Picture 1 (cartoon, rainbow, N blue to C red):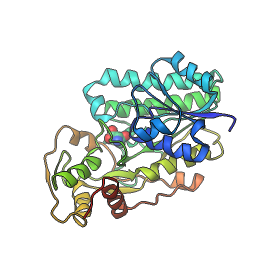
Picture 2 (spheres, protein in one colour):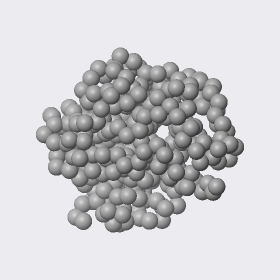
Picture 3 (cartoon, rainbow, N blue to C red):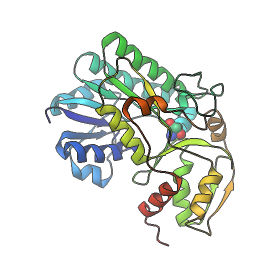
Picture 4 (cartoon, rainbow, N blue to C red):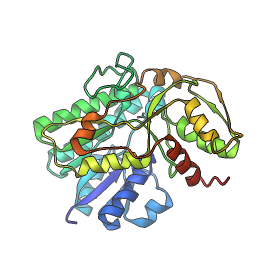
Length: 313
Ligand code: AKB
C-alpha cells in the first residue's frame, strides 16, 4: 500500500473497532492509530500507535509526514451529554479538530477524510419518522450545532478547495469492545453490563423513547464502504439506518436471554436531548449510492453483545 491511513481518536468506541477492521483489510503496518490516551490491548499491540492532541495541527502534520499518511478518519468528538455540560469546550474541540484536518487536506497533505456526523443534526422541528436525507436541520443541542456546522464546513471545503471529505450521520452505536462516553444513546450499551452484573437496569430515558441505533459492525461496514467507493461530485453526509427501539423494547429482547432481567425508568436531563432526535431515518440515498445495507437485527445484536461480554446461560 503506497499511502497509509491515520485514525485520530483510536481509543474511543468507534475508533477502536475501525482500527482493527482497517488493519485486517490493509495490513497492520498501514493503519496508524492515534489518540491522546492509550487504546485497548488489541489496538496497541497490533500496529503503530502515536500519542496525538488533535487540537495541535503541527502534531498531526508531523505524524502524517512521518508515516506518509494520505487518508484520515477523524473520530474525535465530545458527544451530546458532555457537550450540554461544557458547550464552549465541546464547540472548541469538535470544530478545531475538524478545521485542522480539513486544512491539511486543503494544503494537499491528505487526500481523503472521513468525518462522522450524527442524527444529532436533526432537531425538534425535523420529521420524527423515516427522517429524510434532506430535511429541516435545526438542532437544539450543542453537539448537534457542532455537527450541523461541521457538515456545512465539509461542504464548503469540498466545493471551494476540492477536498475529498466523506460523512455519515451515525445513529446510537452499540458495541462491547470499548464503552461509549458522554452520549444520550449510551444507555443501550450500559444496559448490557448491568443486565449481566445485577440483572436489573434503571434507564435514564423513558420507557417508550425510540431512537435510531446500530450495531458497531454495521457502522464500520458503512464507514469503510463509503470510503472505498468512487468519489461523489459533491459532499453529502449520509443518513444510515438500521435499528429503532425504545428502552422497553431492548429490555424485552434482553429478557428473552436473561429471563430474570428487570428494567425501571428514571428519566433525567438526557431525556430532553433524546426527545429532540428522530425515531428512525430514511437511508435510501446511501443504499442507492453504494449499496449500503445493515445486517444485524435487534435479537442478533443482543446475542452478540451478551456473548461479547461473556454472559453464559
Ligand atoms: C450521542 O448520543 O451523543 C451519540 C450520537 C447519537 O451521536 N451517540
